Structure formats: structure tokens, C-alpha cells
Length: 633
Image 1 (cartoon, rainbow, N blue to C red):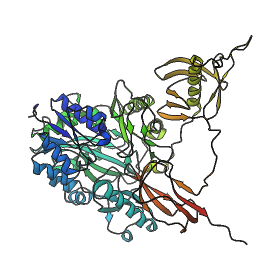
Image 2 (cartoon, rainbow, N blue to C red; image 1 turned 90 degrees about the vertical axis):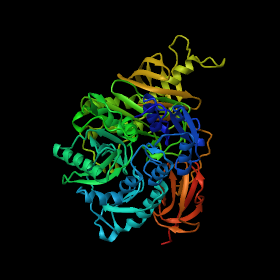
Image 3 (cartoon, rainbow, N blue to C red; image 1 turned 135 degrees about the vertical axis):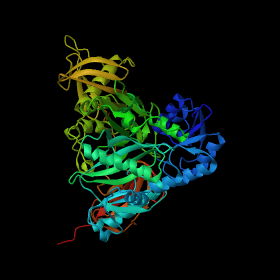
Image 4 (cartoon, helix red, strand yellow; image 1 turned 30 degrees about the vertical axis):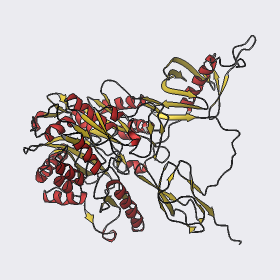
């Protein structure tokens, strides 16, 4: 039984650490936060009763040492970091500290995709066909890390010519993310749906399923939207995946919460086992909101803790029911409309949504610095409704009400995606986002809002005696010209912006509510010297006046600059080397993501400004390629 003497160390950071800490507090369990120097003042540290410094969240010896030093009964690993490392589980077992998760032996078996495949076959669960070499496979194939998950260490390969490059890149990413570069090669299902089943098992032989989730909306195997229940699953398919999941967990002697993942081939209807995640999932809130026990939502972390304490599950499969529908959107520090590049900066204004049926798990607040040192996820916005369409509409509104200024996030992209006909109709499969284009939102309305707010502030500013007041003898005040990315004319007297009707409804606390050309709009606006930021429908728009004194020197199309702060992983060329169009010159990493820097055209490398292991800033020139001079005819 749980009691107030059972201290829990949370071996994670960010929103999941806060989420675990809140359940512990409700249960009366004292908590210890881990932090690195970068996270000394992070929100998750303040959420806990005690705090312990480590040099890295991945240092097993330090984490276990802090658990013992603080007299902890258990360690909750969250997800990512050490959550699926058998060596970590074994170290805790040796130290007499309980892991809120499965044993090291089971984690070793099921946490590895290669071992889990063999166990699934033994349990009678169908698996994706695989091979051992490129020559044996029919393309396309999927190269993926045997350890870990989260889309790291995965590459789709469509031809034998691309195999070696993809394999090396995936292997390097796997080693960086999981400390293990063992790889699997499998058949790639072009049109599949990602279905996963939440299981929960105690140490007394009870194994239950908490129904399924659909995580098909993903980009490069990184989930973007998740929902429960799966909208396209038939009753027969649901029975097949839930029964297989329970059988697999029972076969291996699994204890605690876990997730069994499947790939549903949309063309054939076949369901294949993919892997088992031996930890809590990022998307667990959608299951908590739809899976009810005695009419109340479940708290998966609570049941994890109770199982870890040796308690039997207090309910059976027939006590659980599905109520309504829930959809989750992951908010990342990334620019979705510029190659999904990771973003860094200091959050100036942060507004998370509230309201009936809306849940937000986050760890971002105003003034917080977001670096490229950790995963770019800032939070999760989840909406629940009586059916899928009501949940979808609620999530669109919640993302409308989400505003982050100071750095760019993917919120506007998420909003457009959830509002799209494809998501509404549940036709998005796992490959959809890799080829479909979600257009960048127009800046017309945000520009009007930025200009109106700037003009309003200017009119109320009495900072100097020579300020123009717009007064004209016998006439209405002259329009105000606001310099944004271009000049915008604001006529507050006539109620127009660049001639478009504009009527302000309310303006307070950085929120502007107005009618623009007869349509009601609402946005968060922040006017600062030389920059105006607007969050409209979740998308951050930045307006700065053109620098007319700038030295407009064009470095040429052959200059490859760092599109994000990061670390140079690989440099493959030297000055004077001939390269072809598309040749990889080097590889940059940020937030555990790799970006290949490719030659824009055939030519000669005239400058190499990158060195392996070097930390580079945004915009740093890494390579310059000069086109070869055309030969005289």
C-alpha cells in the first residue's frame, strides 16, 4: 500500500515530470526532481518537494545515486531518457530501488524491437516481414533501431542506391539517442495506420487492456496527433489487436503499464505487430480521458505507482468502458513551414487554452529559455468530446487559444491539420504527412492586427514633443503609416487598415478582438521596438521593418548556412573537392534530429567552415559551393 513515507524520484524533465509529480502529490507521496545546470530553474523542479542535480539525465550511476541519497522508494522514468534502458532498471534493482515499470529482464526482451519480434512470433502475433540485407528485400524497406523509439533511428529506403546512406545515418542517430546501434530492416507498408493498445498488468497475474489509440498522423515516424479510440478500426480488428496485446504481455510476464504497437495495412486489412513500449507513452492522456472506471477517467500514473507498490489491480476488464473521443496535439519548438527545423529562444508571452473538455500538459511559461539541448516538445493540448467531431472542433478552438511568442512553435500547423478535411474524414495514414503539404497561413490578417495595435499604441504614446498627432485643419486626422515588413496605412478615424474595414471590439492584456472585413478575429499581439509578434490561430507571425541601411551583399546560392543552432556531426568534403548536385557535404544535429547539408548544384567546394563536434549558431556559414565555369563551346 502507498503511504507518505514512500518518496518518488522523477527521472525526467518537462511536462511529463510535472504530470507525474501532480499525481504523487494527490496520493500524498513526496517527490524528488532531477535537474541539470540548464534546468536549475525549470518548472518541473519547482513542482517537486526536493531537487537533485545531475550532470546528465542519461547518467545511470548519478541518477541511481541520487535516488539512494534521497531515500527514495521508487523512480518514475517518464518517457525518453532512461525509461527503456534495461541497464538502468538493473541498476535500480541492484540498489534496492523500485522502478515504476517492468523488470530489467522483461525490458531487455520487449524494449528491443528484434527480441520483441521473436517473442511476438512465439505468442502467435503476426509481425511485419523482415530481411537481413538490402539485397534480400523488396523496396521500399524501413531501416529502424532495434532499441528505443519515438521515430529516432528510422529511415524509409526506396532504392538500393539509397540504402547505405540511410543505414549509416539511422545507425548513427540510434547510437546517439539510445546508446545502441543495432538495426532492423523490414518491409515498409506504404498505406498503413498506426494502432496501439494500452496494457496494464499487476504482479498478481492480471493483465488488462485499456482499449486502443490511433497515432497515424505522424511525420517521419514522429507522432503529431493521437486519438482514442481508433476511428477506422472495425470491431473484429479491435478484438484482434486488444486480445493479441493482452496475450503478448501475459506471455512475457509483463508488469506495469506498457503499449503494444501495430501497423494496420489499409490495402489488405492485415494487422502486424511492430513493437512494445515498456513505459508510459506521450499520448497516454487520450486513453485517460476516454477509458472510464465507474464513470470516472483513469489516472494511469496512479495505477503505475500502485502496481509498483505490489498492489493488485482493483478492477477487471469488464469494469472498463469507453466514453466519447479524445484527440491530442503535440506542441513542438519547430518551424513546420520551414522544414520542421527545431527552434530556440526565450518565450515572451505564453497562453495555454482552458475550458470544458480541454486538458493541457505543459512545462513552458513566460521568460523560459528553450534550447536545442533537449527534445523540442513543449506541451500537449488534448480535447475530449462526446464524439470524434465534437472533440476535433474543441481541439481546433483550443489551438486557436494557444499562443507562444518569442520563439516559433508548430501550433499553427497543428491547428491547420486538425481543421483539415483529411483529418476530419480520418483518411490520413502514416505516410500522408511525408508527402502532403500543409500550406503556410496567410499573414494578411495578422499584419492588419499588428498595424492597428501599433497605431493604437503610437497614438497613446506622449513620449516626445515632436510626435505627429495626425491633426489637419478642418479635416479628419491623417492615417498613420506603420512600418512592418512593409508600410501599412491605418486610419483609425475611418476604421480601415490599408483600406480594409477594421473595427476594434476589445483590446486588453495583449489580446486584440476585432472585426476585419466583417469577420470576427482574435489574436495575441506583442509590440516591441523594431518587432511586432502576432499569434493568430496558433501561428506566430513576426513583422520587422526592412533595414534600409543594411549591406545587401548576396552570398550566393552556393552558401549553405546552419538553419538552426546545433552540433556538426559529420564533414565529408574538403576545400577544392568536386561535388555533384545533392551530394551530402556534412550533417548537423539539433534536438536529436539530423539534417544533411547537400550541395545545391554541381561544382567545387570553395569553403568549409564546419568542423566535426563544433557547436554552430543559427546562420553560420558551413560550406560554400561555387558552380563550375561553363566550358567554351
